[in-house]
Image (cartoon, rainbow, N blue to C red):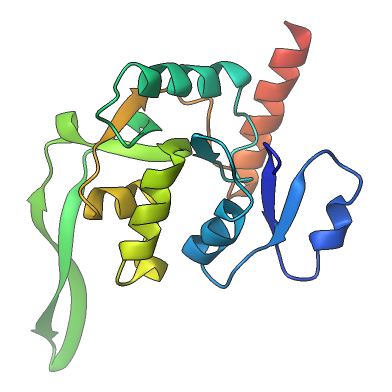
Length: 188
């Protein structure tokens, strides 16, 4: 068993040959990719991390391990950032204007952002707790992260607050910010 397991897209499993890691085929869903990778995990803890967050540091992973070590009742711990924007719940409403029916989003309420956190990766779990949560999930394909599965299974998942540097690269602007942060790290 390897300590690093990569779930690669179909057709790309061989691309990582020769590296000191195990490569498994990714699944049609995030949960299936994680389940495939878990088959190759033989450690007590497992960290799930998205390739879209390239600025992760060893220090962050070590902090998550320390948090989980210190909380034996917890099933996992995730990196998360406090939400800084005001978050609105919305629904679609219809109204008539000049004999035309129009749909528009309307605000249903405002969430208390002091209690809201934006989940990130890495997400660290006791391996058996994550395996059990995946096995028990009725619709694992609907989970947007592993913490959701563990929560639904009844496990306690802790939050490790992180700064904005652990950003997810999904837009050209995100990529530019990541490049600037990496350049700053290299110059430090």
